[in-house]
Amino acid sequence: MVSTIRRIGVLTAGGDAPGLNAAVRAVTKSAILTHGWSVIGFEDGFEGVLTGRARPLTIDSVRGLLPLGGTMLGTTNRTNPFWCALPELGDREPRDHSQTFVQSLERFGVDALIVIGGDGSLTVAFRLMQLGVPVVGIPKTIDNDVRGTEATIGFDTAVSVATEAIDRLHSTAESHHRVMLLELMGRTAGWIALYAGLAGGADAILIPEIPFVLEEVVEVITRRERSGRRFTIVAVAEGAQPRGGEAVYEVTGPQPYQRKYGGVCKVLEAELAQRVSLEVRSLALAHLQRGGPPTARDRALATALGCAATDAIASGAFGHMVAVRNDPRGQPIPSVVTVPLAEPARGPRQVPLTHPLLDASRRLGISLGEPRGESGASGGDS
Image (cartoon, rainbow, N blue to C red; front, side, top):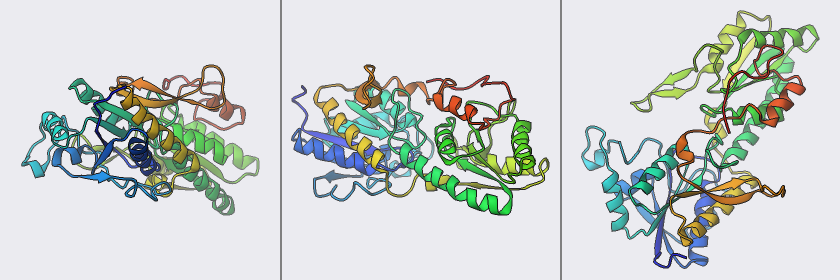
């Protein structure tokens, strides 16, 4: 047990995700009620530490947070303390602020820091650990692409929203005899598209791990039309790409954020419209996947991981992330474990080509954009 802890800090960094407030609540209440520590929340992710924007967190201040989406602390995915430009600190060009970050934590009297973030934010946490910052990570992202954990805060809500969207598309697609393309988030990983596509009864699911062949998508549409089903639903991950081609990006913002995924369904819409007789429409669900109240599953996951993070601090497990792993003994309830931050720092976790939902999709006749007879020639890892 670490007896020198008196105050801990917590921040939410990267993209927002449903369940962040539940995690902040769990961290705060468990730190105060179980361990007797005080808690300070830094605003807008790592930026709040650098600029000194922080607030004390108390039992009263986190009351009512459990069902709320977003994050009461604010967040940003544009501030990396190792390389960023902050006008508040007089910057005109990006520079290394890591020592300023360490000094700020010392000034606030923070004995340990909890970083709630995705693979990018947890990579920053890993580098801070190498500087000697006592840090513990909590994995959150709707993309579910953090290595070392089988579930991240926000994923279940995003899948639920995406599944409902596919459900709603069925009625309008069938009524108007249309091909409907739904673009879903996930960056380089197809977790949302795979789960929502299967749950929503999509006819084709295109994910980054399995580069698609356009003519195979055309074949799905024409085969359904010949059989009298004059509509098709295609769930498309934003990072999906054609075999031998590249992903589609929406160019926006200064580097290193210049390349932003978005627009693959618009490209597919134009290409399919020239090859099929049915009308083709596309839409991007975009940030609707991030918004609104978290599901019960995300609230429970965030609560479990928030409590586990304070326990990790109490036991001195710095430089680790709390994570969800299936119990090797076959128990139905996953275990919460600690994983070295070096694991999420290895990069995003993609859908493994051996994932059972890929096999289930093929067995149900759902196209993954592969030539018939193939079962995935390239893709991700676990």
